[in-house]
Length: 236
Image (tube, rainbow, N blue to C red):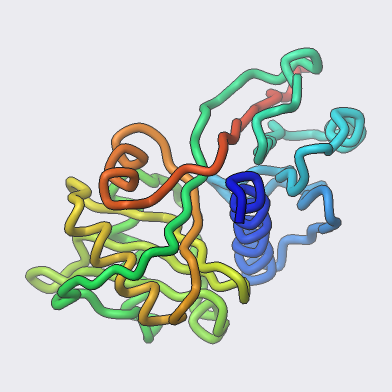
């Protein structure tokens, strides 16, 4: 596959994660080949609109945001939309990554989250790592979804590292990584766990900063850029 094809794959896989999360919370959404979007406030840390094709027209974004009564976040999965012309401000840039090579690593200490109590502890650790919100983000119903899974690294009775994998048939999405200091060994173990979960399936996702640097050092390759934008609700 070309890098452009890997970027398309990663964007589609990311939209799958959105779908799993929104359905678990009962948040209405619409999904087409071009867009995943909701007309109500999304979950914390999630965008209102996610593009799934690079040819998405800015007019589509503007149509959805014109009547919004809340701040609108847009994930431009291909970093091509000139949204500053529509009063959006850039929140951050990131890069998509993919991994096709098989990784072998000692994964002792890691466990897949299976119970509601484990998931509660996992979410508490995820929030403590910097994802602060008062909202309960990961309902136990997600544990019955065969296409999404959680892993945590247990130390002294609590999770100190963790991540989410979501399977879309042709790829595994890696997201929501948390760790005090993310090491290359951590990423090798994460890749090994995902590949054991869904063998012979490439891993995709996105990252920025030190996390992106570490994924590249581990053997992941980048396939393109994305941009997250915000249009804040104008006070009346």
